[in-house]
Amino acid sequence: MIPFEAIRKQSRTERPGPDELIDRGEIDELVPQAQPIELRALTVRLRAPREQMGFSLTDLSERTGLRRAAISRSENAWNLNPNLETLFRYTEALGVGLRLVLDEPAEPGSDIWDGS
Image 1 (tube, rainbow, N blue to C red):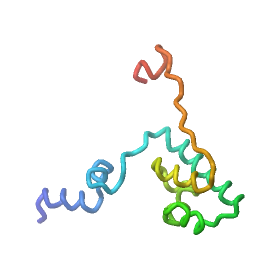
Image 2: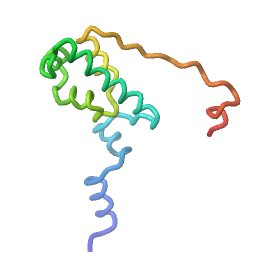
Image 3: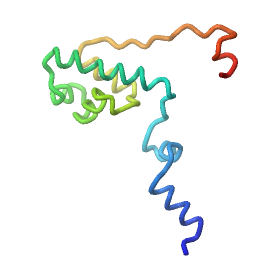
Image 4: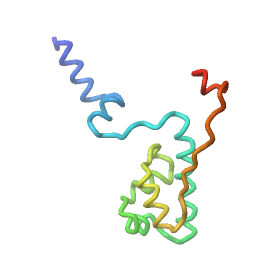
């Protein structure tokens, strides 16, 4: 019979949760649930200027230093958590701008203020 601690250790190794993957450095911090939709829309929109300029994935890979597969995953919304450096390298290589916008704070009395 396998001791309980051995089973626990095996499950951590074979099926780690997000906290363990973050602790090990295998993934970055997770994006809050509402944000992947905006990030997905942004990364998918990056494909159009690349194609309009006639750049292949390989061309962009050479210009950015990013792996071709990473660019493809971003453009096809398979990478739900691209980091800012990746986004800036991608847009700089295409000569397009990337702006980060801070929305106005929520008004007191709105849902964000009451913890809902």
